[in-house]
Picture 1 (spheres, rainbow, N blue to C red):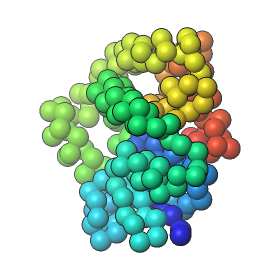
Picture 2 (picture 1 turned 45 degrees about the horizontal axis):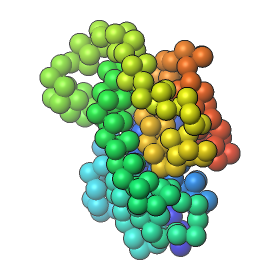
Picture 3 (picture 1 turned 60 degrees about the vertical axis):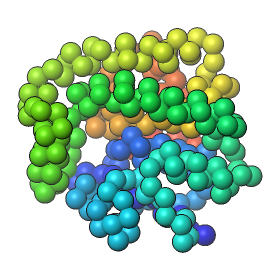
Picture 4 (picture 1 turned 30 degrees about the vertical axis):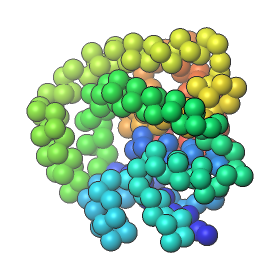
Length: 227
């Protein structure tokens, strides 16, 4: 069966940037699965696959459609049991739920404050209007007001990554000796930051940056090729 991944891009389709879509890209590569990627602009998502989902990623695997990066990972684990595991068992699934919660409540808000204006500037005009309206409504501030606190947000990023940094003292990946889906969850957040702003804004001697570089080198360095 052919696999298609719908992801998120700005005006440049060669620079998909969604953290959730990058989780899925890495999960598919981890499983050794071939797929075609179809990056979509924000305003194109609602009509993809006849309006199947308001958000990406969306995965089509033959006749099967799945949305949400975690649900896609669960689907891949079940549908391709003979391929390398994404979770290493039920305990790994439970751990990944915690890592996802940590990433989305602690890392994502910081990345948003750093990258918000950069993301806006990557978009085509129609998507800029959509992005500004929806994000300003959600945040209760203009994009420009959020931008004034960008340097402060950058300074708080190392603290947001402290649990990961502490863990890396004893193992090279969240998954242990090798990566699991939990690694791809946090990687997606930092890849989002890297693609939209050009940097992960971490010191060169930060163990988290070393871990991120190891992740960029996974699966033929596909993630590193997007910048």
